Length: 349
Image (cartoon, rainbow, N blue to C red):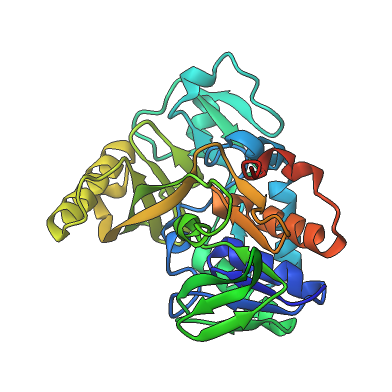
């Protein structure tokens, strides 16, 4: 296959770039930041597995491959490491009580919950346990993908803000950026919420909303939280020994005062929920902006001549290894991936 430019070095673009380069495709990976994962990727809770995140639209067709693709990636790239802790959720357990849980997910009660999370002050009567779930460091994982793409011959350019598609008639010849013109036979747009603007010259409709997420990092005694916990008021997991990541419902403002208050709110919720959390301290709080396509993942061609391809989704961290593999296979072989059938962009007029 001829040269491909991938716009965006978050985890989706990094995964696409890696999987293409691994198959011998000449790839140029452009990112507007000084290093990979400086956007929405770095602000992710990064819960991998059956209970984590939402599965709208075509994401349902991809969820069965997620765990296997992450385990494959761990084998291929030693710097990719998943904390396979399992998850315990009761945030919306009642709503799911009469629905099939699917493979790898089980209802558990009192004694099992106490064994899984012995520090919970007020454990629920029932919860959903997914023992195969895990969490990753999204920045480290993206770095590993970018480094591996480069090792397979990809060109990686940072601080390269893409301003437009370069077109001759209806044909896209490459992209124009702050680092110059980058020619390509194929352009893959993996720039999250920036994709709709880039696609304005094309006959495509790509509704992608920006959804804020509040993440709080805290110090904690090692092992205070043993699984990925999703309770009604927050989600929390241990990122590494003594380091917790906690998500909160939407915070109204990004001012320093609001972020400080959000951090203290997170600390209070943690201390209310877990024995031994009196020694926890807030390390930082930030608001991330996640791309949320209206109908689920949007993956496929958006130009009539098939020279522009888009990949935007939530939850990107969960889906990235699977998406990267499927997109690379599709572009290299020319055969549509059946798993992506329900993810296609709206039909061109």
